[in-house]
Amino acid sequence: MPRHHLEKPSVKLKYLSTALATALCVAAAGTGLAQNSAPPVQKVTATTPAPKLVVMIAVDQFSADLFAEYRGRFTGGLARLASGIVFPSGYQAHGATETCPGHSTILTGNHPAHTGIVANNYFDLSVAREDKRVYCAEDETVAGTTSKSGQYAPSVNHLLVPTLGDLMKARDPKAQVVSVSGKDRSAIMMGGRQADELMWLAPTGLTSYRGTTLSPAAQQAGTAIAAAINQPRPALTLPADCTAHDIAIPLEKGGSVGTGRMARDAGDFRRFMASPEADGAVLATAAALRQVRKMGEGSGTDLLIVGLAATDYVGHGTGTEGSEMCIQMAGLDRELGDFFARLDATGIDYVVALTADHGGHDLPERNRQNAWPDAQRVDKALDPEAMGKAVAEKLGLPQPLLYGDGGDYYLAKTLTAAQRQAALAELLPRLRAHPQIEAVVTREELEAHSISKRAPDTWTLMDKLRASYNPQRSGDFIIALKPRVTPIPESGIGYVATHGSVWDYDRRVPILFWRKGLAGFEQPNAVMTVDIMPTLASLIGLAVDANKIDGRCLDLLSGPESSCR
Ligand SMILES: [Zn+2]
Image 1 (cartoon, rainbow, N blue to C red):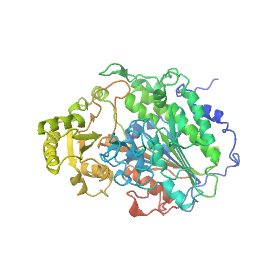
Image 2 (image 1 turned 90 degrees about the horizontal axis):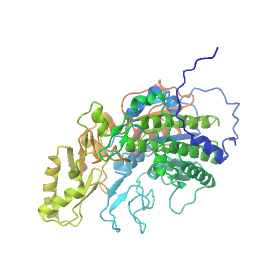
Image 3 (image 1 turned 120 degrees about the vertical axis):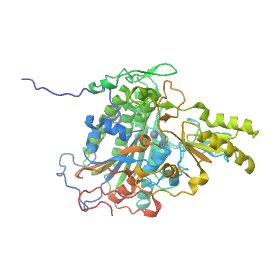
Image 4 (image 1 turned 60 degrees about the vertical axis):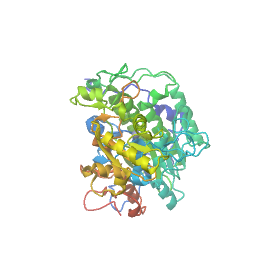
């Protein structure tokens, strides 16, 4: 009699982790640790020695909503993490819920107000170069650069506080810290200044800071990744539990989203990045580097940092509720499962923390079809350049008057005090009267407000904006859009949905911890991503000055014992 299996249809994708492991010839190399003589699982208690390896994973745009929606369907790595310690209501507590600020909170224990990473891009009208916009992870003093992608010099300079890896290195220079990500700002903001190796995906495979040479293992990984990018990818088979998502949503500028299968041409890096293949490449590289460097096999604790960007690219390109995100969730789950299986095979005692840099929000066109009829796109008149031009013409002020990106608006430095006053007197009421604007807050108002110590689900709008405010980098005033106003004026292929708002769909992220032998529990009350760093530091016996961070240690031991020292 044949046995009847309840098989979960899988995504037909040649998963890169296996391909890469083969290319790197490290999969079977062993670690020197006996694989067959693993001791029985010991229950982790307050006296259990520190884990040998901390694995920090950030999944870009992995909102608490996505985690909740797919939680019951995970069977791989995310199912394992969901059986561990689960904070389903984690918060990137600050208001400017963008990638760079979000990643800067995870391993520093600090809000963007203190990390200095207030946005992906901010304006510094005093910089010498013509482009006054500054990318969060660049060195704008390098000659010939601009803030545009591909034209800046990647740098950690703007990060104002140390990361967990920096503190581990300061305690023990032999501690190894490696950071691998899909995006430079993710690798850099989590990796910090002292990482032994730090890299991100590029059309050529892997890359790092200008002038640095990748290690031989990273070069080998990069070559394998480039080869994968240069292969075309046929359409993937839709998993059976994704069929309900498979509905075409027409876009204003033509085309549609919602029924994609992730097919791509050879060399199409953008589509490579918006697929589980990109996450597989990062995870395979991280696993290979761990193995080559023997991380987790020394006397102390090492730190492996992983940034997975594909979920974000899928969210921006096609929204959060289509076939594309469903395929991505299945792929992410599987890639993480493969990665953990490789770590398990080493016998190393490792702890995993997983969170996201921000949440996400579906495109208005689908929200309108799915019971949210007033979902909108932002009015073009709110564009800082357009608004500055209109006000300058009305008041006879010099142009350009106003700069901005995201919620931060900056007035030209050339204005006299009287001109500045006149500009604000015209701009602020105009903005406040706009039907899509929730609030406009000035830097003076933010400076008079202190950073909230309350639980992040009770924060006021001022609390959120204050946690994103840094006097050297933030705008002269900051605007917050009303809920469900998407700050992309028109929908077109490639960029239809986003995050960045002060609202909980962009602030709430899962915070998950797993370690073999560590009893799982669920804590639905709100905690913050700034709590992750002190939690991990305590687990590895690293003292952190509570006055220098915004987070607190989360006790990962249920019962009367505590993992917080
Ligand atoms: Zn992001």
